[in-house]
Length: 286
Ligand code: G4P
Image 1 (cartoon, protein in one colour):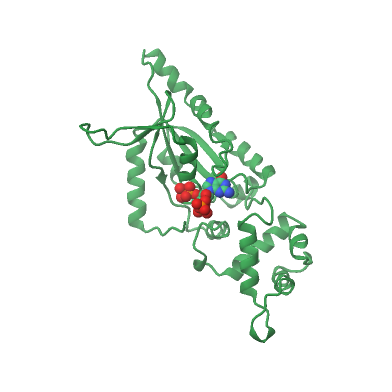
Image 2 (spheres, rainbow, N blue to C red; image 1 turned 90 degrees about the vertical axis):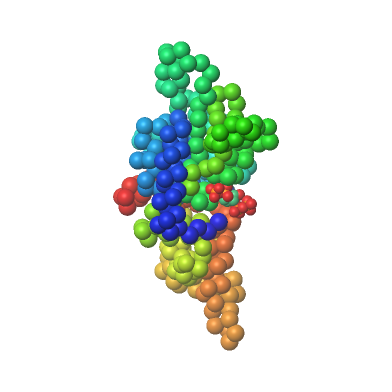
């Protein structure tokens, strides 16, 4: 789940994406619904220029529905087709096929006028690591699929998965990298567990999360940890350590243990459905 990107990796990944781009009609981009901007790659708009575009707000089961609806509007206004999915449970996954057809209707019309019949739409899934690309592909494809390409005696080519008579999907997703250089992006990716924990200090991450929750999701910390949300963020962590009996030898409070509890409970949904960025804040930061 953690990724290590080096300039060499990025150049190679980008080159592969560029090559594949020539083969497809539509780019299906997965983002994490809790951080739709921070989980996007800055180059994708340029890479996929002139293609039909579908953004999938994935992991909606973990995101705040109200905020996800705002993101849906946000991307629609920018001209994207948008769908909400939970690739793990399969919710919304099959429905994306009809959206793909809709997003490609102009191409289909052009084909029809030129007398081209039955040419399938070719699609590619892309996104940064851990947004759920493989899970989505597995859920969409299921067991009943036919792979085309790379048949014996046929020139080695790309593997396409035939989803139905109208749509073919490139079997390997395009992997992109996030906007590492932005500290906020790094923090949010770490909070949702997409970057290895060791890279960032646990206490600092937990404190940032506490501050965010205190400001955006009033009552959650108070309910779960019986803390006073009017206190400052460090004091709240201290209260959590106390209430959860996080102590080291000599009875000193163990902030790291308390931090781990908060981070873990956020990641496994025990704190509820929470989004870490809104279109309004995201646009301001950008
Ligand atoms: P990637 O190909 O983009 O790198 O992501 P991948 O499908 O490997 O998914 C990364 C993790 O996210 C997996 O969890 C996967 O189950 C989870 N996931 C994908 N889509 C959703 C979703 O819509 N909702 C939720 N809640 N989780 C989702 P994992 O813990 O790394 O693996 P596993 O324990 O599920 O096998």
